[in-house]
Image (tube, rainbow, N blue to C red; front, side, top):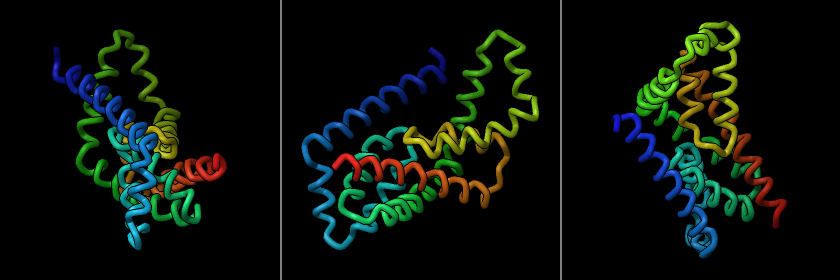
Length: 184
């Protein structure tokens, strides 16, 4: 088994464990108990939940906590503070993890035998689409690593990255909070 295959299997297992943990903390009431126990530190809790919104391994539990915060706090406050936390989380990933993810993506793409497939990566349309698709991935409740890797591949500078990360993470958190408050 190659190093890359081993990483992919490990990441898949961790993702499944993360989803299982999110279901567990939601069903057992741990989310609500935790939010109630913050007593005066709610803003910090929202910020930290936003930070965890960005990683493949912590997205599912973060969604559970952000949903709980949105039910008890103004949605725009949860969106703003969660978005700020997500920017911090994304920036940490962008600075320290993007190389490994980019390496894994390149490995997966290079395993294709079709040479024509690689020609698409050299087109101007692809260079425009990569950052756009990366931003959409960041906005979605899907983990941000792939979107961050796409933005990193597009050679986006840090200031633009931080702005894109804040806008799209905030949009994703807003949608999650809106769904959580609508379902009440």
